[in-house]
Image (tube, rainbow, N blue to C red; front, top):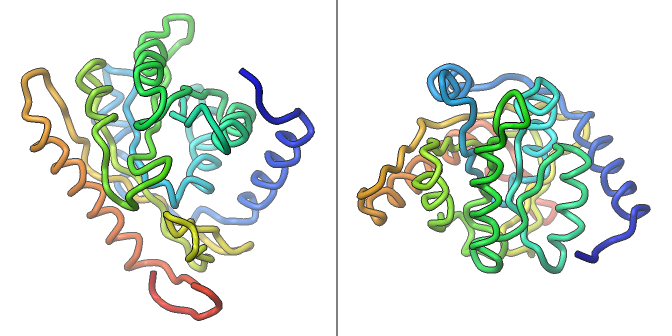
Length: 234
């Protein structure tokens, strides 16, 4: 697989890491859900987030889990800008699953299965899905994570982040969120969504969408955004 050069990857990683390190983690809500209820006896979970919060969440997962010997692996598109994003994530969080809900989906699912069954590590890797990536519609969950949950038996844990202050790129399809330097962050987890063989996919997708909507509403109630120079609630 081709892709960006080492210099571009190193520069992007240094910029992302340096930027996110100025953001202080003010707290976590429902953080016991994945660490106690989900990982007990299972060793992994599938984390689900929206594409617009990807920037800080990857840094958070690297600090919170990867460096504490709980590996994560992010599902990333294998074409276009996804190559650069994937290479940067490899440097930060240590794991990438190439594929997406629109391209390379089968390869991505196979990667999830390999990551969840990896017996060469003390614990299997927890896959991370951006449910509306790589091209939207914004904040609409796609069924890829359901297939992974059904195949692995792992629960899907909704997660998002609220910032004290942030910038919103209004012209991007997802209204991408960038935390302001020096601001605070609060990571919010939702209740796990389980998918078993034989479950109705539409009902489970609606449950996942509802879980993501709830954590998103909680984040929007706590943050403050600047959109095209005008401060308002996101």
